[in-house]
Length: 228
Image 1: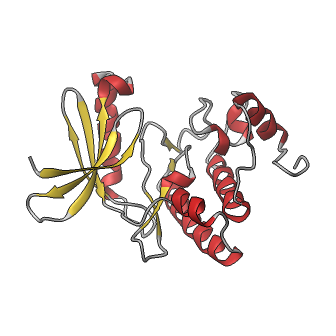
Image 2: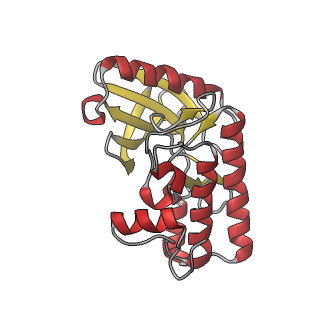
């Protein structure tokens, strides 16, 4: 009841969608990310843990990380109220421009690294950074913000080594594809490296089927190049 749904779907996912809402108290726009618990495969107990974890991020504040404003939980749904970022996905800008200049790519990568550095400084590993994870603040602005928080993908760094594969294959570090010896926060930097490659070259470094991508990533053999 605190927010009015405006109808426009800003994004979709397996667990739910993101819609534009307006605060009834202030009239300001926000993005509402809705997790439909049955389709997300979350039990009530696990959903409550996710909600409690999400609330930890209410204190996050960084120029390149979208703010989480509020968390709501019901029997069938978990809702996150986020800062409304309207400049479009970095993915869409790549689709339109095909390639970034070195200067524009450097500016974008610097901002993404600042966002990741902030997460790591707060003891969190993202594990699923993609072009779609970053949006421009406004159509006329050059400022990028990390907006993609699934929370089930985030990992506390006190558990230093992770073993479960979570993420989008095309952006995943080779060590994340093996359960032994596991992987660390450095996997986020590999994902930023893949994004950097796409900005400069205009295509993914590891294309092909799932098997072909996996083998190429594990061998460090990017498209058009030799093994790293």
